[in-house]
Length: 288
Image 1 (tube, rainbow, N blue to C red):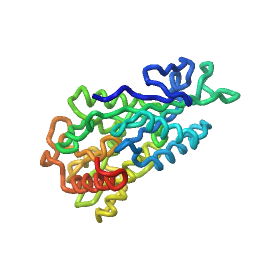
Image 2: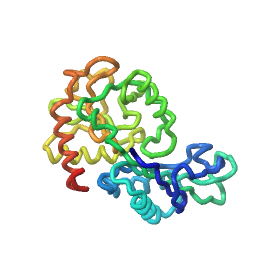
Image 3: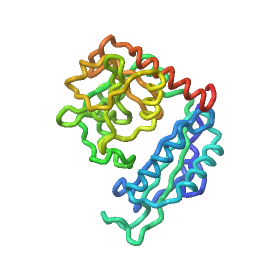
Image 4: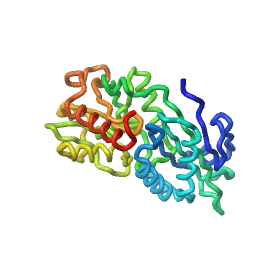
C-alpha cells in the first residue's frame, strides 16, 4: 500500500493533507502559475535536468520570479525525506497571494511553491503499455500558449473527462480544421512507412520532455522522423499510433472511438521504442 503523500510548502515539509493555501492565491483565482511532474524510479527523478529547464522557461514566459536553484534543492530534499522509491514528484509555483485583480500585483508578491511526492504501489500504465489504449477524438478547446506548462488545464480536463466517459484512456485533441495537436496529457505520434510522424513544436504544442527523449531514441534506432501536422481525416494513412508522457512513457493506441486501430495490436515501431525507452531508464537509474 502506498504511503501518504509527503509535501513541501514554501520550504516547510509536512504531509500533503496538512498544507493550507490561501483562497487569495492567484492559482485559485486565475490558474496563474506553472508546474512540472517528475517520474521517480529507484528513488531518483528521471530526466530532472530537462524538466527544470522547462520550468525555468515557463516561469520566464509567465514573468514569475523565483530562485529555481533553491527550489530544485527543496525538491531533492523532499523526495529523499519521503522515502519514495517508485512514484512521482509534483512541483507547482504560483504567482502568489494578492487581492483579486486581473493584472499582476504591483509591487510583486512572493510566489507560493508546492512540492509533493506520490508513491506508486504499482506502475499505473504497465498493463496499458502491454496491451494498448483506447482513445477518443475531441475538439481542442485550449488557449493558444500550450507551449507554457501552466495551470490553465480546463480544456485538458474536459477532454480527459470525455474520454473517461467514453471508456477510453486518453483524448486526442484536434483543431477546427482537423489538425491533431496533442493528447489531453500526452504527445501524439504516428508511424508511416517506418518513419515517425509528430506535430512540430509551435505555440499550441507543449515541448514534452518524453517527446524529446523518444525522438533521440528513434534516431539511435535508425527510425526516420517527419515533424509535420497530420489530420484526423488522414489517420487511416498511418500504420501505427502511440502517445508519450512522463508517467505513461510510450503507450500504444489500439482503438479509436470504439473501432480497432489497424490490427488492434501495438505495432513494431512502437514496440522498438518501448524497449529502447526502458533500456534508457535502466541505464539512467538502474533496473527497477
